Amino acid sequence: METPPSSSMDLGLEIAHAFFKPIQQSSPPSSNKRHTKVSVVGAGNVGMAIAQTILTQDLVDILALVDSKPDKLRGEMLDLQHAAAFLPRTRILSSVDFSVTSDSDLCIVTAGARQIPGESRLNLLHRNLALFKEIIPPLARHSPDSVLLIVSNPVDVLTYIAWKLSGFPSNRVIGSGTNLDSSRFRFLIADHLDVNAQDVQAYIVGEHGDSSVALWSSISVGGVPVLSFLEKQEIAYEKETLEKIHKAVVGSAYEVISLKGYTSWAIGYSVASLARTLLRDQRRIHPVSVLANGFYGIEESSCGKVFLSLPAQLGKGGVLGVTNVHLTDEEAQRLRDSAKAIWDVQNQLGI
Image 1 (cartoon, one colour):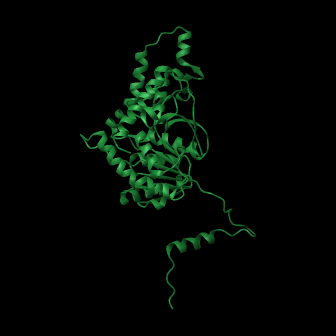
Image 2 (cartoon, rainbow, N blue to C red):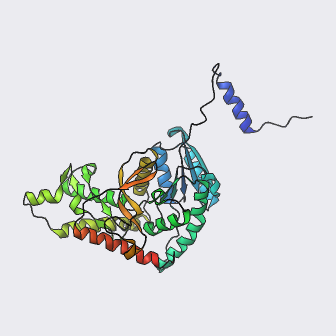
Image 3 (cartoon, rainbow, N blue to C red):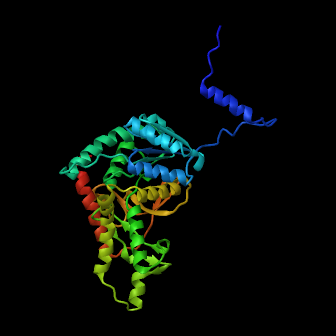
């Protein structure tokens, strides 16, 4: 009887075994050794920028990509795999089937419907709701202990939807929120003061959008509270200047989109920083979209359950707590107004 030819995989294993002589009296790897796995849903510009940044920062052992377009998905996977000689060793998988995401530590969702010219925001939200009904339940089923990180826009409402559809506790459902907005804010302040952005502590909170709130009262540079320092030194500053910087933050994404058609690199670095904090239990504080009820006067009786960005401590289990940053009365009111703006849109969805 003729022996069937060996597959190329079998041949590869034979050659690999021939390369190395086994160590005598060795034991197999410990069964409790666990690989770190991240799944990215959506292989568009944002999803691939996130995947590429996570790979270059050596954050995972296994990276799984999911998209509805099989050819593009396979092309993106191969393109990343071909860079293996220049990257930390990571197993890269892809499939249109969500089973490829099984046992993920972190599931990042970037997929979302694009707005059609002339389409209302509410209609876009309805289409994204339908899309999330196809994405979130299988993710939750295949990785019941994972953290869900939502990047798709409008991120605050979609994070709420992901929370409802997943059945996860609220600490394990997070939106990327204003993490990137706050980075842009820090950059503009640093540029204005001619200092390094890493020495600037500043937050944008609330909605990732037009009703976001700049927390001017808590900004510090090198540990020095900026506004109180200016007042003590009797250095005059105009509120219009502050508002101009905030408007630049809100408008910066629109500017990038108008110039190159989409945003990708900054959100890639932003989400990779969140992934690093979550996977490595770094307990850093990030302004991300979390269930906001009970914080800063945001009550369910006035605006229902809403997700919006607050300075939150993140770690292995997701959201560990919300920072008790001092807000002025005006900032607190603006934050509540932002919550109401999100609720007004969310309420129209009927979920």
